[in-house]
Structures are given as C-alpha cells and as structure tokens.
Length: 278
Ligand code: SAM
Image 1: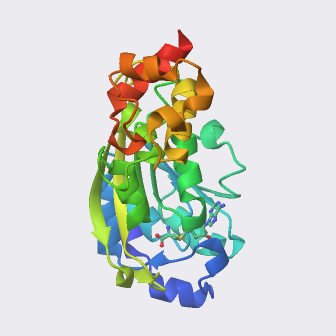
Image 2: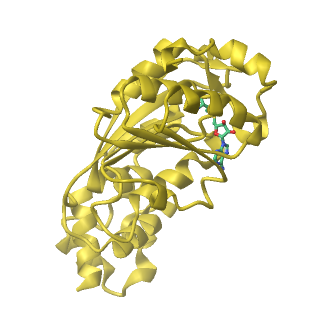
C-alpha cells in the first residue's frame, strides 16, 4: 500500500479511538488536500529530511510524504497516535521515523541528516517556545533551512509584524533578524477537528545565511527584551538600567531617546546592541 491509498483520517481516528485532548493542544487537520497544500508551502522536500512536531493521526505527515520528502522524523507525545503513525510508516518504507517523546525534551538532531526542513501544525501551548529555540541556536546558520509552522493567527501576525504596528515586538525582531518570514496561508477554525476558538495561519521562515545586520545574539535579545517589556515607555526610561549614558547610545544608534520600542527597526536595534558589545 502506498501513502495515498491509506484510509481516510476520520476512519483512522475512529479505529484508533483518538478523541482529541485539549491538554495536548489537539486540533486535527483531516482534509488531506489541505495538508498536502501546507506540505507544498515547505518547499522542495525531495532532497530533505523533514522534522515534524506533533503528527497526531498523521494528516500532515501523509502530506509531507506524498509531496516527496526524503525522510520524515515525527515527534509525538501522545502514545495513542503511534499505531496510526505506524500504518503510515509501513506504507512509506524507510521514510518515516516516529519518536514517542516530548518535543521540548528531545534533541532531534542525532536522528536527522541535512539538509533539514521543519514543518508542523504545532500544539498551541508549545509553539512559541519551540520557535524561539529554533531562532536562537548557539551557531548560525541553524540546523534548519526553513520552518513551515501553523500558529494561532495572532501569533503569526506577531512573527511578521513591522515597526509601527501593535503586534511588532520581540518575536518579530527575533524572527526577521536572521530569516525571511511570511504568512503563506490562513485557516478558519472549521478547518480543524475539533475547531479551536480562533483562526490559524501558516508562517514560512527561511533561514538567511547571515544576519541582516551584525549584532551579538545574546546582547540583541537582552536589549530587545528590555525595550519591549515596557513597550509603552520611552526608550530612555525603559532602558535606563542598562547604562548611565543610554541617551547617547540611543542617539548614536539612530534612535530618538523619546521613541518607544514599537517604532524602532531591526537595523537600529542591532546598532544599539553593538554599542553594548563594544
Ligand atoms: N499534525 C496533526 C494535524 O495537523 O492534524 C496534529 C496537530 S495538533 C494541533 C498538535 C499535536 O502535537 C497533537 O498530536 C499533540 O498530541 C502533539 N503534542 C502536544 N504536545 C507535544 C509535545 N510536547 N511534544 C510532541 N508532541 C506534542
């Protein structure tokens, strides 16, 4: 049997009694046309290993395999999903490895061979945490070429936000400093079973070979975290604790001391971070 001949996902869920659990962020995609479409957003998978977090009953996993992924490593916390995933593995011999683990605890790299792409319909409760980890590795370029990730729409908008918008903040700076980030699909609640309360969106991030502007990652993260922690305050007040001459440093970085964090662009944040490193 090949992947496209597997039974419909509703049948799989009924057979394996996979009633969705809220505690695990389980909102399943059962429309295989839709999961194939998401898989296509991940780019050319033929030469790549794909890391998928939270395959659940395997809708997106099937999409990734049908779209030609060289190998998929799927990390699923819920052991109830394993028999359904095993059926997929049998239909795609040697191309699907499933690990029953918490994605926050596992280092998947020992099971993957570059080039690597990441694709996932993430559990909402760990999505942002995983994204921040993938964006802040010790070395750049990171282990991944691209991330194609489903988020709550509001989180997706924070990732791609530009200065001046209400949703612009730490997540936008971290995402856009070293990658290109775009929203490539939006999905209404009814696309999922059970439907969540809010809409969702798929974000595609491509790793840049070099950061857009030079800066030490830790210093940049620290400056940006402080600046947005008190986003209503003028930066000379929000960053006061960082250095006695903060106003001079802001001016040298091209930032007005009376500006608020949400109006400051990436280039200026990087210049400010460099002043601390120096
Ligand atoms: N990919 C499937 C789909 O699109 O239908 C399921 C997506 S559902 C939103 C999230 C999945 O992540 C669930 O299968 C859930 O069991 C799994 N999950 C939740 N927490 C996890 C964790 N810490 N590590 C790995 N998987 C997790």
